[in-house]
Image 1 (cartoon, rainbow, N blue to C red):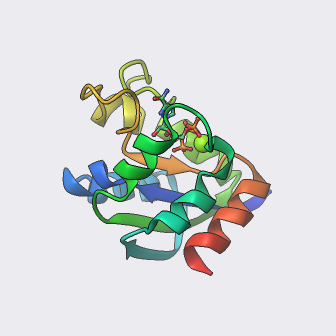
Image 2 (image 1 turned 45 degrees about the vertical axis):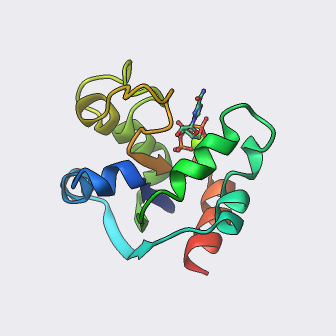
Image 3 (image 1 turned 135 degrees about the vertical axis):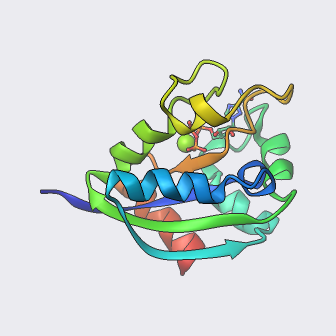
Amino acid sequence: MNIEETLVLVKPDGVARGLTGEILRRVEAKGYSLIDLRLVQPDRELLAAHYEEHQGKPFYEPLVEFMQSGPVVAIRLAGNRVIEGFRSLAGTTDPTTAAPGTIRGDLGRDWGLAVQQNLVHGSDSPESAARELGLWFG
Ligand code: RTP
Ligand code: MG
């Protein structure tokens, strides 16, 4: 067993569309454990730290603006290999081509704003998870 923790975010589009419950349902049905959960209105400073690796990319500014457009649900999620497992549940970044059966593939689509609005975030490595959980949960 390799019990890990990861940071999951329901992004502003997921919260605004009323999909928080459906996303939590999928995560719980998979058997992962909710350790902590909070509704956050992230400020620019938090998002700059969270998206540090993307600073300078063309999508960075619009992404940070979008992430401030409404509340976000931050979830501390635990389980065996949950970092990789949640990213598999989420599907690939672009919701237009994400596989059916995934959160992004079933519930997301291209709303004309590139691929920002893809409903969820999941940490991509143990190092990212530790760093991001520190940022969102202190
Ligand atoms: P996430 O970090 O949110 O779990 O998503 P990810 O690993 O699949 O995507 P990543 O490459 O880390 O990008 C972070 C978020 O930036 C937005 N994005 N827009 N070309 C674009 O317009 C573009 N590329 C990425 C998405 O919201 C993506 O989730
Ligand atoms: Mg990422």
